[in-house]
Length: 429
Image 1: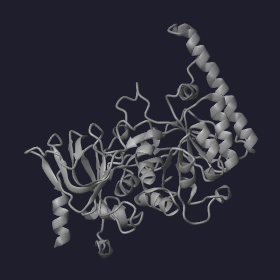
Image 2: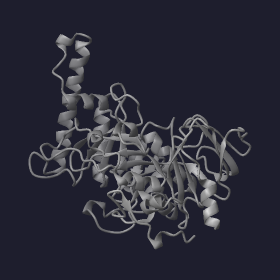
Image 3: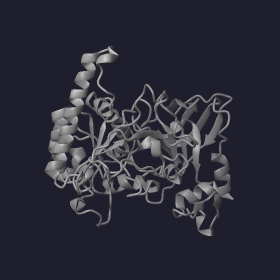
């Protein structure tokens, strides 16, 4: 009976979003600023209106009684593969013209699983089997039927809402035309960036004279966006020597960079910090996988943070499951990462890596109303994500049996629109 009453108290209809919604009585972790032991988050029209201990609640507001709960910003996953998409094929190791946007299924149930883990913003990427596997997509995990409605931008013709996925190390090596060695891999990347520099020079020289413009090249267009800092490179790299190679390439060509995985980042933390490059760390707590990841340490995030590196986390879903994304930061805390640094790494730091910090990553007036309601402390083993809200709309509710299957069931729990509520889905908190 208590659970039913709790579910009812937290249930708010998604209609009439212009009506204010007040989340009242929760312990609030705004990430930017001090925690509020018992406060209110007021949202309207998809935006946060106010956050604090003494927020005036409008008379017409819908009130969500979150007493005894924890509210924090939605999580930002800087490296994900949800949506079922794939990027480049095996015809060439560098395919910067490929867009993961054209391959994402907005109804893929991986999106619902990520919502159940509290993820509200994600960088969906092509794979890492290429030196350059294509353009990524920055998305909000909304419940939509068109992939364009997932994107963080409104106009694909005038805005860029994604980065560029690159990789080095073992993954992109292979038979020709793929490189057989690390040295050849770096050489191929340099050659392509030099071509992009020349393409940009021709475009600049032509100006508005269309007769002087070079023949359109979609891949070089995307690389010009990289060279001009409009598109961030998200670089898959593991070993310390591979990380330093990436830093060298970045110094040569000046592109904006986020280091992804950085398994041996702890070995070269000083060099990463000196370069001012952010890192998105993956946390895997069991041995196995590729040999170049053998140097993984759970203290990696702590060492990087102590060196002054901006640190975030990612799932690489399905390498790690989005449903348990908070666990990544919890394991890093266990290995010495300060709690406040862990909170930032799951939220605002990831937002900065996607150039979205003005919209998401913290609970502040004016930002998007992306938040999660937790049953307890975010890093406690027994805590559940109970609700996930994106742009002021509820996209996950643990009290809904179907949503509970996404949170707790196997990958085949929901198939062809038919689902079964199993006895083991009951909440035993």
